[in-house]
Length: 332
Image (cartoon, rainbow, N blue to C red; front, side, top):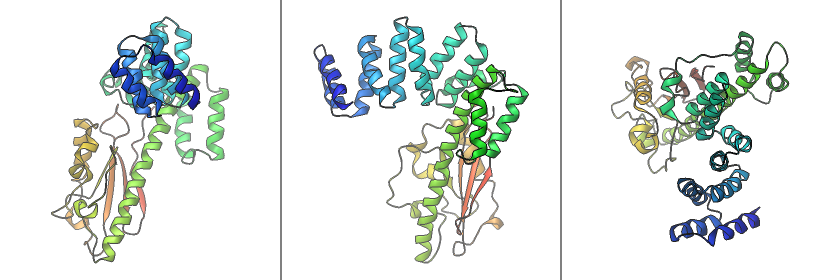
């Protein structure tokens, strides 16, 4: 694969401009971010041939943006069926523009229910500007399918469990009481649902890390409610989905991660941010631990852009007990 990718870049390089040459050199060194920029460059120039070649190569590397580049290039050339294949791969990799393109294709074909689901996937995967138009849209999923979703939320806590795999088999084989449209829509909803489940892992991971820091603090004398002290010298991630911190009532130097790493939360909209921060004001002083005895830390996030008031909340204490306080997984 590496040899073929390098050969592809050499082929393009004969006609490349100076700026393209720089990207080609970096891309040839397996710097995939440069390859993405190169694909976006060709899309912006309507250079569909080169955009497709770069996109197809990146899609083969399991990169959703590459699938989108390839699908977009084929759409522009009128190759609808081939484009749908690449766009489907992109959407399944949580690439929102691929989902939106598929939604538009379904809409043109008169497939309103499928178009709606693809638009929902685009919204959940990051295209927030289209979410408002979807808030009051029809569901189309039958009562039987809704019942299956409810049961899957119980049985698929472990996605590898026998019960969960049985449910997934029911959808894949599309047997009664499900109908064909149910199965198509359920597949779309489950991509939203399982992506949200993956995001939930961040909450538990960050809280567990915080527990480790707090344990080290206690060994030196006392726990703390000041994240500036607890996380001193720690390098943050580029972005977080959950704000982690303590109830505001529990200390004058109380901070949350958004206070100390604001750039890592810039992608979260103002309404969502307001809702999240408001949660940290719920606690009362008499519910707080003394810093020498213990603490409760919270991870608060929003997993459903169609229901911004629904929060997903996790908690950990000094004994490493993790509790799912509020379930904010997306609704069907």
